[in-house]
Length: 184
Image 1 (cartoon, helix red, strand yellow):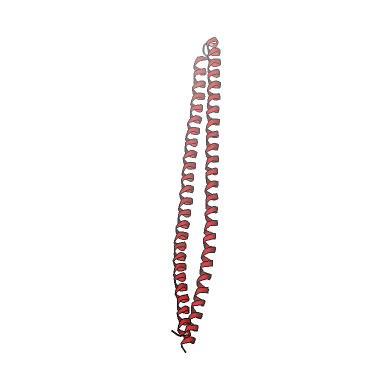
Image 2 (tube, rainbow, N blue to C red):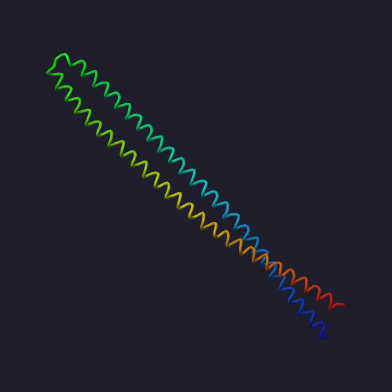
């Protein structure tokens, strides 16, 4: 084997190794691209699902609060009417009417306090639920930002791989030109 043949064999060996490296880089690029797409779809799905669940829960809580408030207000109205009707019926006997009115007023005040307590409890429950939903939404946004950073890192790696691919392609072209020059 003469010197020229040895040089050609060495060039071919180098070229072959670079082709293998190029193929590996292409495979890595395709793998990273697939992972990127999966992560992006997963983030979108998770965010959509979480916000939809939170929205549904808030609607449900608002409906429950509105229903309970409406029932309590109706109960108050009914009791006030009943109290007035009873007072009117019993006024005929003044002594008994005064004691009955006082008794009814006491009962009404007690029930009014209980309704106000229940109303406050419902408002507190709604506030707590809203706070929890807000905290959950904050955590979801934080996860989304973290995943977005990971996607940016993958894009940067992808860009680097494309640069490496371009450099390898240029190197391969140069090697081929050198091989042609040596063959002449």
